[in-house]
Length: 547
Image 1 (cartoon, rainbow, N blue to C red):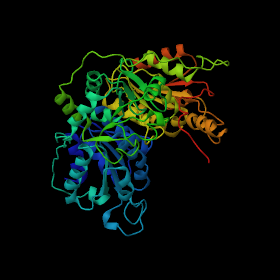
Image 2 (cartoon, one colour):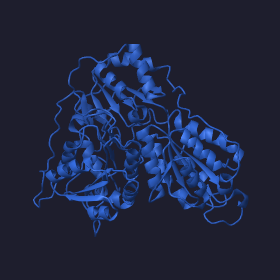
Image 3 (cartoon, rainbow, N blue to C red):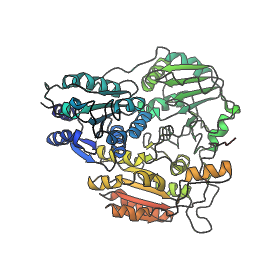
Image 4 (cartoon, one colour):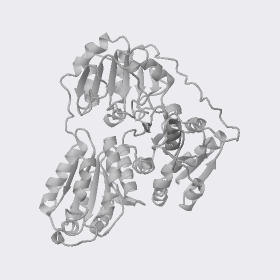
């Protein structure tokens, strides 16, 4: 069999029903063999969109996502998607092409080898494994290495570059099983956290998006309830804990709540961090009087443990779910009666629902969106002030229904992620919350959703600017440069030009009506919401200094 046939056959065995990408000669055999195996090739509008969609597919399906890109720029366009998947710890297999290996060393168009645009080296910093398959008989071993790195331990993207002549070469057929039953790494010292938890007088549970990656929703709930620990989520951790739970204090940092800030200032003696590296984005606005006396840090990687908060720290390394299960079992912990951590009601925004010109507040737009969506709707927040409004004001009913990355932060990635997620789970309501700036970067992927009949709901908050940059720069320096569009995007018209339903909303009532229609629609719907361009988003704890 050809190498391309063997790859397609294995993907079919792994249960993959969609692969995302843009074709080109070096990878064209893959298109034909995927089709022969009954695997749908989703033609995206940009390779970055393919990588984003494949990662969203992996997140939603809990399977391996696969993205294809041709040689040269086809591969380099996937680099951003690889970096974003790495930040989310998502298993993504990226396959790129290259002109024939037999011609290496000659002057070649879109050369991806050592002599041209070396894709293997370029992908190394943004993947867990990157290699070039230079002989057909190496495919089985290299693919096995790639799958093991993608799917075991801290998951993430991997990359294989396969020259055209190797892809066309004959090879003995083989079938690789996905390494999905490999035991996760469990720390031998997890129980050392128990006496610290028992002795704590004012603890706090600090949850990041790693709780999503570990599927540890039930474990963190038991941990919180058994020891009566108030819960704060990071921006990336939005969605891992119900916001109406009596122990929930909301988010800290960008988009954070007054309850979370005030509790951290009240003399925390133990901070339990799960699924967060405690980055500067996570701790934006953190002050000296918030420093805890002790930290317990659950993470797979020790690299950043103890580097941000200079206090005694107990590292618990390995899989967060497994380590929490071990801790819970050892302590015989279970759900029990607990006291509320704080008042549950967050104050309404300081601004009214509409300004003097009748323009809608983005905060109220997010509240209207929440009221109209089903409780189990899955929302992918893009990177910008639109999502920080949601971090502050969008209630989480079911854990695992909101996804956002506050570390790598690729603008426009949520558009592709939502498409891939809906392709994997057509039974769920999938929503992309994005902004006009993100839409102008990757909004063409709406056409992908239209052409492949993937009915995502795209919600675009439009204020005619790169709002987070504009407001942050203005707040910190007194002026803003280069963040406002002279000719703003007409998002609804743009959506209709791509074949999607496009509706423009200016009131909360219009938002609720549009969402109700979109939930029932069998085609992609773009809901453009015109919001107050001068409203101050909840992001100003992130400081900029020109000193």
